[in-house]
Amino acid sequence: MTYKWNVSSAAHTLIDAENRRQELGKITDEWPELDLDVAYQVQDETLARRLMRGEHVTGVKLGLTSRAKQERMGISSPLTAWLTDAMTLAEGVPLQLDSLIHPRVEPEIVFVLGEAIEGPGITAAVALQAVRSVHAGLEVIDSRYRDFDFRLPDVVADNASSGRIVTGGLSVAPAGLDLALEPCVLHVNGEVVHTATGAAVQGHPAEALALAANTLAARGVALQPGWIVYTGGLTDAVHLQAGDHVVAEFGHLGSVVMTAS
Image (cartoon, rainbow, N blue to C red; front, side, top):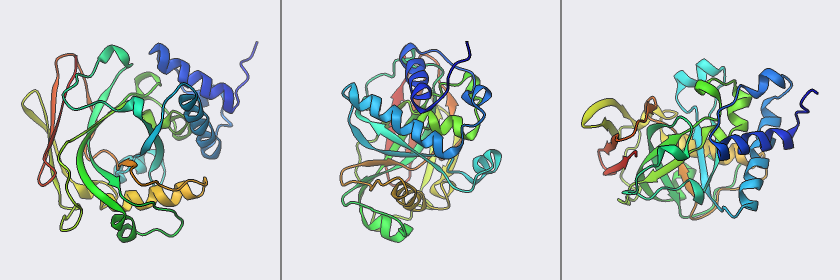
């Protein structure tokens, strides 16, 4: 019997894979009609299922924010996806690798909103005015697809490979920061593995924030006060193994630390 693919069955398949920590082949291999609009419907359905099991929306994240990654995927703007409280890992609490499939980690600049942002027509300058504080962050991505092999609709449906987030404790007001030039050094087990600046994210992280507000507006969503926004990976993601000690060290935002076990 041929499996019947639709928004509901795709959401069920992805949530089930996450729950069972079992990777999948690309959904688009079996459902080639899955396009970007329908993929976002699947993403929203996966969120609805998370909320039904007691999770709460805490914000949003952006994916494929670097120009190089966008060119590889054939797109011109980032993806948006949801963050919930179940994805949040407190700094100092070890990341349990056996709760995930094949996690990778990347450093990010993180915004906490003090005011709502509702598109369309939001500019980076307007978006930045709504930011209450800026933080260092580490995002653990964990695609449900085998070997992180997916097409664009696949990864959108999969909530942009959401896994875990760790936010640094230092809270910095955005005024006076030059986030395009904010340096970041990613250390793994004491070794420098990547360096970058905030310009790696759309030229400026506030551009990513504005894009989130404008693209979510088309789905009838406004960014809310208190929401956290992960603006996208500054560097390539690094595979995690048990015992890894990861530090993202920023110029003005302090450091954020995570240990895998």
